[in-house]
Structures are given as C-alpha cells and as structure tokens.
Length: 103
Length: 279
Image 1 (cartoon, each protein chain N blue to C red):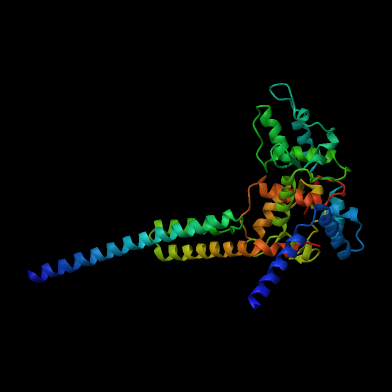
Image 2 (cartoon, rainbow over the protein chains, first blue to last red):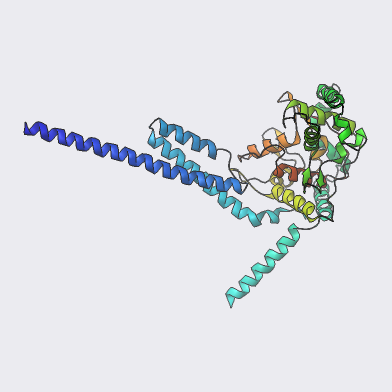
C-alpha cells in the first residue's frame, strides 16, 4: 500500500515537473519571440530588413503551435541572427554608402 | 595627444566624405555619364536609352527581332482606351494633365511643392482618379501599367529632363535620399544597386549581362518575355531588392519614388523610348 502511494507521489511530482518545464519553455519562447520581433521591426525601420526574417518568425510560431519546440527555437535563432545582422548592416551603411558614389 | 590627432583626421575625413557624397545633382550626373563613357568608350550616350541592348550585341539582335512585332502593343491599346474613358462626372484623365498628350510622361517624376514629395506618373494618375471620385488603380496591376505604357508610347522621342528645383530644399532632400538608397548595400547578399549596375556593369550574372543604370528609367514599363507580362519600373526595383534577399518596399513607396527621381535625373538628356521589351 505504501509502495503504491509512494509511486503515485513520484508520478504526480514527475508530471508537475514536466508541466512546469513545458510551461517554462513556452514562456521562454514567447519572450524570445517578442525580442526577435522587436529586432526585425528595428531592421525594417532602418529600411534594411532581410527577405526571410518575417517568414522565419512565422514558421517558428507554427512549429511552437505544433509543440515542436526544438525546431521553433532554431527558427527563432535564425530570425534573430538575420535581424541583428541587418541592423548592423544598416549602421555600417549609414556612412559607407557615400564612399561608393561615382565621382 | 595621439587620440586628438586621430579624432581630427576622422572629423576631416567624414567632412570630406560628406562633401563628396553631397555634390549637387548636376555634378553627380556629369560624373555618372563620364563613368559609363570611360567604361564603354565605343557606346554613344544616346544608346543607353536601350538598356542592356546598348552593351550586349547578341541580345540586341534578338531584341530588334522582337520589336518587329512589339509584345507591348496590346498594353498600349488598352491604355489608350482607359485614357479616353470618361468618368461618371463627364471629365477624364486627360483633363488632370496640363501638358500636351506627348509630354505627359516626360513631366514625371517631378517634385511637387504642395505635397513636398516626389510624384510619379502612376501616382499622378491615381491622384487624378481620386480627385474625380473614381476608384484608384492598384499599382503593379494591368490598368495602371497599360496607362503608363500608352503615355510612354506617346512620349517617344521626347528628352528626359527631370528637375530638382533649387528653391525648395525638400526637393534636394528627396534626390539625396534616392541617391543614398541607390548606393546603400542591403539584403543577405549585401549588395547595393550600384554594385551591379555601376561597378559590375556589363559582367555576366549567370547567363545575363548587367545593364547600365544610365538609361534605366527611359523605357519602362517593359514587356518581360520571361513573365509574359508588362512590368513597371517599381516592380523591377522590387525584383532587384528581392534578388539581393532584402524585403522589397511597397510599389510607389517613398523609397522607390525617390530612387526613381535620382535615377531619372542621372539619365537626363536621353530619349524616352518606352514601352520596352526585355527578356
């Protein structure tokens, strides 16, 4: 009887841990999605957004909806990298363009 | 001490760079024309109105054959029909444009002092429709392209003469914004318009040779054989932006209108010869 009770407790605790981890994962995804979206918008405001960034973010959301969190995070990282590089590109170009003017 | 000296050098270098970048439109144009003249000394200035066919003699032969039965003819006819249609109030598009029919296309792009922005032919058409309570046309769709094809056809032989009025600093601003856009690298491939159409002009990209920017705006809209459809200048801009893997801007956005303003100014003095036919 005690053994059964003990097993149930272990099972309940494991379930709770899994649910907490899943919810933490989802919260983490939401946070990272918001950050990547903020960076994408910053690149767009600088007129420097890359072609695929928005689509990568949309795909990440779709994967998260399907609970494929590994794929979702990978897509999110790709989108974030693109947005950050596009911002850096715009910052570099703020002066660099002038050096290309035909004179 | 060393830091101060480095700071001073950087300050003067930036000042010099800005001065070079902000030479006036006419100095820019002269330098632009001189560049292509020195790159292709055998090509007369007037030939640049023919785009890539000024440079690529093989493609030119095919183009001349295509021009025997111009694939844009249908678009021109449709455009004429739309131009002549009366609005519900009895007025028509022609009444919005003070110029003679064959000079309408040549008047654009222009800087409009009232709105403080560059107005293109497409935008002027929609402004006219709006002021007559007509539904506006969707940029990139057949009707507006057909209208511009008709007006381009009427304007054949007129000389491109875009002005940057010097009594309104906003006009120079628009020109400079277009120029900056042209020379700015963007997208995953990190390319500026000038990388292909100035620096690498005449080189091959796969099977195609890169055209000169000088003359780009004279012949649009064009019939693209590979699409089997007419294409506006702004759609071509969007195509290039997509090709370098950057997100394209909306057709008739301020970005593209300013770019058209700059590019058109660079091509001043060339004949208008639209609509064109391209591969």
